[in-house]
Image 1 (tube, rainbow, N blue to C red):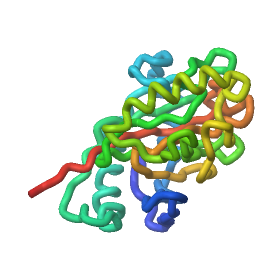
Image 2 (image 1 turned 180 degrees about the vertical axis):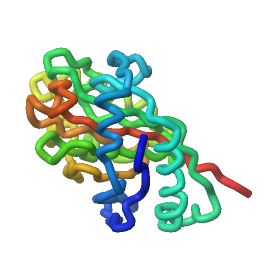
Image 3 (image 1 turned 90 degrees about the vertical axis):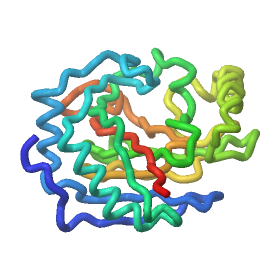
Length: 239
């Protein structure tokens, strides 16, 4: 990947998540040339079938090159870590980064794909989404599971995931496709628009989901579809 550099004019915005003491970090104009990532997707990436990475991501994915992972890791360490209370002496390890393209139509979704999800139930895990498409293809929202009044799941809350799944199956009329707004089970507490070359960072144990609001969002079209880079990292404690 050529020209893989941070944009010196990038901006960082901290957004409070309602009903929590947590924040989402929104970084605009992240890369100096995000087009190099788009070119990687179009010309180099070998997209594996849905579920090949043992996730419920509703589309195809391929691993990002190491230079992107190193850049993301360095950026978080230098720019985001100092903003995290009590974490300044720790380090970040990006352990997975995936070029991602949504391809699955709503009619083919599994129940697990019709509801918000968490990437982990651990407090030290972070998720990143780097949008390579615009607002019209949908951003990301954070939700509250109303029956338990919970937004952030911890390891002791893992049993709630099975309860959520059963509740969604029981409310099929409200959860027949991608979740893009509040339902009787889930309240959308924060919605973040997509924007080309926008990076969004949040804790992976927050209930969240993509706002796939149009047919183009899941078209699977490399030219006009919802292309993004999804990455996952862990905070490593020292001392």
